[in-house]
Image (cartoon, rainbow, N blue to C red; front, top):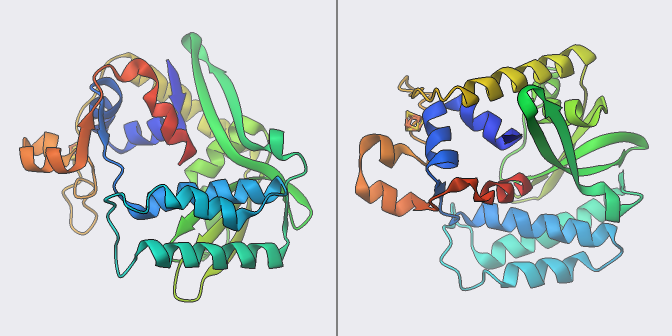
Amino acid sequence: MILSYTQLGSYLRCPRSYRYRYLDGWREKETRAAMVFGRCFEKALAALFRQEDPGSTLLQEWSCFCDASLEYKNGESWDRLFRQGVHLLERFVQGNRVRIRAPQHDLQVKMIRNLPGGHEFVAYLDAIGELDGQRCVIDWKTTTSRYPEDPDGLLSLDPQLICYSWISGIPEVALVVFVRKHLPEIQYLKATISEDKRREFGRLAETTVAQIDSGEFPAHSGIRFPQNGCVSCPHLGLCLNNQQLIAANLIRNPGASSLDWLDELMD
Ligand code: SF4
């Protein structure tokens, strides 16, 4: 078995959802404009580090979705997202805080760790570079609201960053958050992941892969107000046997073993 962070997170949130997605092949339709735009934006960032024109790359990538039926939220539109993207790229260039010295190797870096039982853990790191002169693992995020920064040290609990630190062996991690709001903003958030946290993550990966291997997929429904995980779960229609919800949110690729989930690693 090859396990990714996305899969691990899915299993820990709800093993039943994991089974729907990765064994039965039910995947969420990609209709959210924000998510599609985020991918285009990351391609523009990569172009910037390759000394190409990031604005043109963003236009070229995002234009592919100009006529697509995407779901825009809260007054969003194709034009508005594009303008916000250009503004954020300009701010990023002005800030000049991130260096990627060898973009051909240090962007979308594939890393693999062996797990017991012949299993593997694979991750694609957005970047390994320098933020304010310090070498670190960097993860890009595009979002409409700022990431919380308080209390101090909160970011060191981020499971995705702990995962990336564990798999790369690099203790310093950073989130570069591109906030698409009225006045676009970029947050540069840094954390140091301790050796203990990395070891703990390794144990979590090992126990999770063993549980998946044993074929146990109980439903972890989250029915407690206000934190009801089922409401935002793409597989809710399957659990409720609601054909309308299934048709609206999911498509099925039977035989999920075809590794289509690797696409999600770019998220
Ligand atoms: S709807 Fe709830 S119980 Fe069903 S798969 Fe999703 S999280 Fe699990």
